[in-house]
Length: 87
Image (cartoon, rainbow, N blue to C red; front, side, top):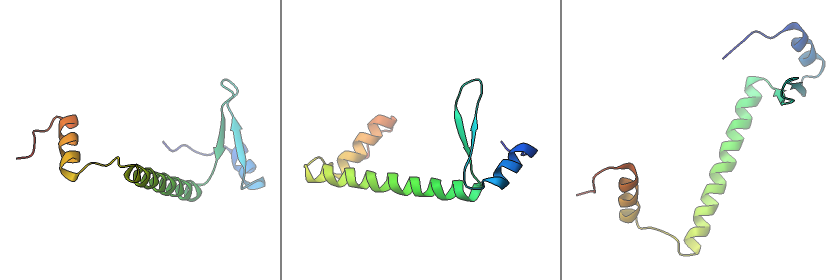
């Protein structure tokens, strides 16, 4: 959803372009206002970090001997997803 920026928020961003926090008076939740380019960079960096951590967990599992053959992994996924066994 995209909505128009209210004037008071535009002024706040102009006065402090790097840090604008909004507090919801009903829930006390705090939100951070960032431009879309910054948000996109942050999301890519987060995804890269999560991917790296996942690979590290997989390598650690392999070192502990916790690994499946490709055939076993395929059979397990097919069973979980309700697909027929591979012929």
